[in-house]
Each structure stands twice: as structure tokens, then as C-alpha cells.
Length: 467
Ligand code: GDG
Image 1 (cartoon, rainbow, N blue to C red):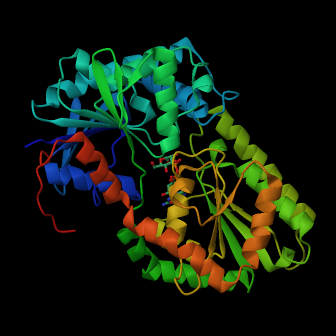
Image 2: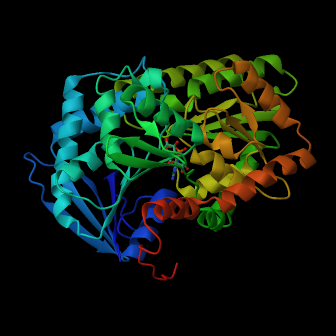
């Protein structure tokens, strides 16, 4: 029987042990850990003057977490540096924002070695490892160097960039070659999977062995198209909660018969917020008769404030929303409600349900869970319309949304105008297949699909646990 060891930059503690909101991903991973009696390992979120590798264990509701403190310099170079100033912009096609610094690359490598040294003694012979996301590409190879021969998987939550963009990264070849330490690599879409394959084949000389299997030297990796979903049942419960119902009433009252368009995004340049505001302004300009029938609520909690590109986009969005409101607002109406803070998930569920349009227009996004949450929260008798970027991974599963090019202000403007007058019958016809997909391909489906590829038949010890 194998235990599953999950490794990610931050560890999400089980319900009750922290006051923070629970994401669907954390819940799904905790369920997998409970089933296998495994461990979740990562950074504690705390700093230490001198790295010691001392592990802090916590056990809560059948899940064991193991965390380690890092030095401030590690976080500066590995997390704020290489992960968020180099890889994040590059992997979202923004080489104009990517910073290529040897100190960042060095700190990223050092911190991954520290993680490998720290976690290695926790791993037993039959354990299976599942590493999450771009903070930890080389961790698998570091574990192999330390004599770990068991099954090891990696899941990438962000896009994989086209080969020519990735060749701008000075360490690209080593980084991708190191990923052949994994047995399974999962992506949200076939497109990201194929871009990985292109790089491995053309730049490294890897060969395809059919069925998503790629060989480099004596290592083969199984590539898996494995789109993540939300915790649909939990989100449905949240939508039916008292808090969501009260929020719904409050929003409808404050909308005074106007249609609400909603956007919910971390304040991040990849989410296309400036382009969205441009598109919205274009809609206001071109559709004077529809103008005062609607308003846009944009919720954008600040994120990664230590990185300057995030401070800059925050300032630009403040200026843009101020400009649009200044140019178009009237005595009894303001076009944009721009809110720079986060809300509990049950409040968000009520907001989604009160909206006539969900506006989800990232320039690039690995998947985008807001699109799925919006769909899950709708009233089946009177559902809202999802306007979705073609460049979000979610678009592959959501063909009946109104798909737009987020760089085209005209396409965004036209889609808003069309959604506002869309007849109920068409709204239902478009929404129903989206809803069926969100309910079926949920986060448990994702997790089981990945672990099935990672673990040979029946290897994961299964136990029933009450919800
Ligand atoms: C990465 C990839 C991929 C947002 N505002 C509030 C709040 N949120 C929640 C949303 C949603 C989550 O945050 C955001 O998820 P996304 O998928 O939209 O985006 P990233 O954070 O960039 O996530 C992405 C994902 O990983 C999973 O693989 O889909 O492509 O970039 O759940 O609801 N939650 C609360 N208050 C807020 O104000 N509680």
C-alpha cells in the first residue's frame, strides 16, 4: 500500500486549523491524503535567520502536514524572484515582464535542493510523490539524485508557453530536461501538453513513443491532459447557503433592476483586467441605449504586492476605473464598481448568482476556476451568460460560452451587448452543457484521473471517510 506525499510551495491546512478560506484544490488534495494516510509538505510561510531544515508536523482531521521555514533570501530569490518575476510572466507569454537574473535562478535551485534535503527522510520505500506547480520544476530531479526511485508525478497549474518563447529563458534546457525525472506530468489542456512536447522534441531531441509518452535518454514520461475542476458539490452547497441568499438579495436590491456584470480575479496582469476595462468602455461608447441598463462589478483582491509589475497594474486599474466612471457616470448611476478586496466564498457564490453576465477574460490562464464557479452558481431557470477568453484553459471544456479574444476591445464590447439581450431559451441552451461539464469533471474527477495515471492499479490505499 502506498502513501501519497504531496509537495507544493504553500501547504493548506485542513478545515478548523486555520481561519483562512478553503480552496477546492486544497480540499481535493486533503481528501487524497486522507485516503492514503499521506503527508503534505511545503514552506511554512515563516522565515528563519539560518536554514535548519527542521520540520514542523501537524495532524488535523486525518491529514498530516509537514512544513519548513525558509530564509528571507530564499523567498526573495526563489518565490518573489524566479517563480513570480521570471517563470510566471514567461509562462503567461509576457517576456516583456520576465526578469532573467542569475541570482533568481540560483536561489530557485538552492531552495529546491533544500526542499529535497528536508523531505527526503520522510519518504518511505512505497510512497508515491505528487509535486504541484512551477515553483518546483527541479524538485523531482533533486529527489532522484538523493536516491528516490519510486513513482513521481508533477502537475502544472499554469500554461506551458510556446517553444520559441521558452528558449528566451537562459536555463530552459536544463529545466525541461530535469522534468524527465517525473513519471507523469499533467497539464490542464492538450495545447499546453503539446507545447511541452514541442520543446522536449525540438530543443532536447526527445522522442515520442505514442500515447503521450516521451523519451529522453533512458527516462520516459507520460504526459497527461488533465483539466482541473472545482469542488462542485461544495460550491452548490455554498450557493444554497443563507449567506449566499442574503448576498443575492443585497446585490439585486443595490442593482435596482439593472443587469450586473461580474468579474472576480486576483489582481494579476495575466487576468486581462486592463483589456477588460477597455472592452467595457468600448461597449459604453458604442451602445448608449444599453448603457444605463447595466453596471460592472469588478472584484480584484491584491496579490503578490512585493513584485513591482503588480503595483504598477494596480495603479493603472485605479486610473482606468476612475477615468471611465468620470466620463460616463450620471446622477443615479455609476458604470464600474471596482473593489480591491477579497470576500468569503459563500458571499462570492451569492454575487455570481445575482449576476446576468460573468466576464472572464484572462490573456492567458492555465485553467480559470472563476468561470466554473460562475456557471455552478447560476439559477437553472434563469441562468446568466458566461463571456470567456479563448485563451483560458477552461475554454476547451466550455465551447458554449460566448468565447472572445480578450485583446480585442470590440469582441468584448459586442459580447456584452449580445449577452444583455440574449433570450432566456438561448441562455439555458448555452449554460446547461457548461453546468453538466462543471458538475462531472470536478476536482475529484481531476485528482482521481491524475492519481490513476501515477499509481499502478489499486496501489493507493482506499478508505471511506465521512464527508
Ligand atoms: C492558478 C492558475 C488555475 C478570487 N477572489 C476571491 C477568491 N478568489 C478565488 C476564486 C477562485 C480562485 O481564487 C482563483 O482561481 P483561478 O483559477 O481563477 O486563478 P489562479 O489563482 O491564478 O490559479 C489557474 C488554478 O491555479 C488551478 O489550477 O485554474 O489558471 O493561474 O477559486 O474564487 N476567493 C475568495 N475571495 C475572493 O475575493 N474567497
